[in-house]
Image (cartoon, rainbow, N blue to C red; front, side, top):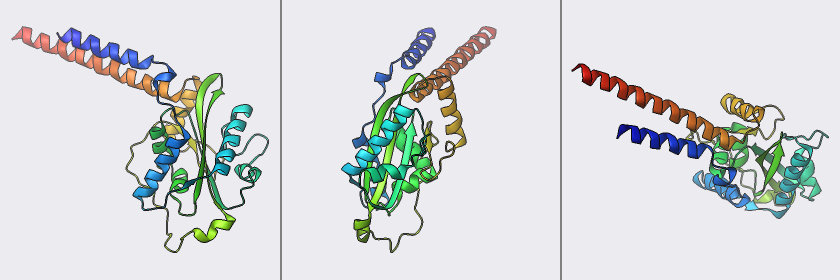
Length: 244
């Protein structure tokens, strides 16, 4: 009976590991916007309105990253995020950008952004009225993965609609545990945020595997260790019973 339980447990772990990318939930721009506004609602901030101009700016940025094979706020050709806004004739008073890579689940992606101070400040800032989002499948170092772009903005003409009288500091909740993933601060072209997230993202990139598969691999390794511990405990128990 015990052997059957252990075998079933290990087989289930293997099945989870080797499910293809289609087994993981795909991210959609609508989901990304919904999760952003859910966070803002909990903080009693107004919803961000979806902007077609910002959607186009985000799509152009995502397409450029895919074509030029980079993941950064500034392209190898020196194109900054603000140029994508200007290309869509979006005359902004305030603007920001969030990026993410190697996620196939919108909730995990949102958690990673909320765990990063700079990302969270963009999501929770009272300075923004609008948002645009793009999600793209792209080939990254020989493997397919997903990138997401968030563009935040307030037009010059809409500045009077902002209520910054009681702005204070942006409040970023700390209710989430650490999650796996890679992302970049909105106002920094430097490295990945969070030591653990950056390390795991580097591992995924080095071995050319999707982040969701790395999560599955870690799950599988944990399942194997747990299975071995169960076997050892049963062996010790059997030896103890025989002695008595």
